[in-house]
Image (cartoon, rainbow, N blue to C red; front, side, top):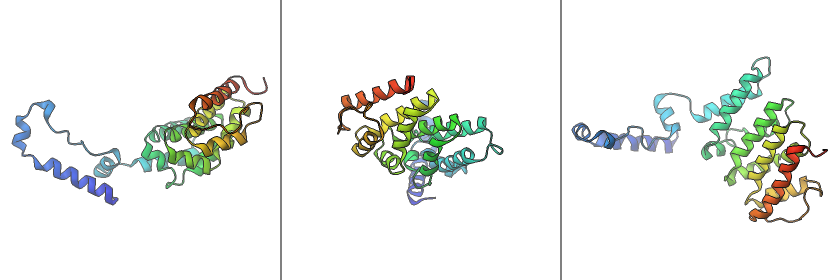
Length: 220
């Protein structure tokens, strides 16, 4: 167990052993202490011996990357769904880097399987939403051009829409990603150079244009 986790568990033990049992029993039910109060899911998992969120993230990615002969697409999609739900937590999203999961996640944007491309874009979108650390990693691992390519060229409507959502979250209030997106789009799409990533009205104009393209396909 990590030192912060140990300290939190120790504090929980002190708080829950300090009050005499008689005092607790005499209080109305709604005022009684919740034994799990103050413990996050990671600490509870360690206390109870269950898998941590990091373990579940690893398990999900292992299933995603396994050959289809070993894990069929139905189960891969379950793994993708589990991963996406886990990284809704900003702590878990930031844990993608120490777990070495950004590289395989970005690689899945180029998967031959439509479902994997769509879910990879969805996970990217979830990870970077209001999360500067994940925005930095998405950019560093080269996902912005890949997502732009999916919006412009992917044959599947769902993939294009998810990629557009990911770009929308990736560039807001993060100028390096905005600049990278500008370089990744043709001039017919990007008409104003040097947009400010903090100017939400300008960002919305670009993203709305991408949403139009995603809805119909660039070649239509």
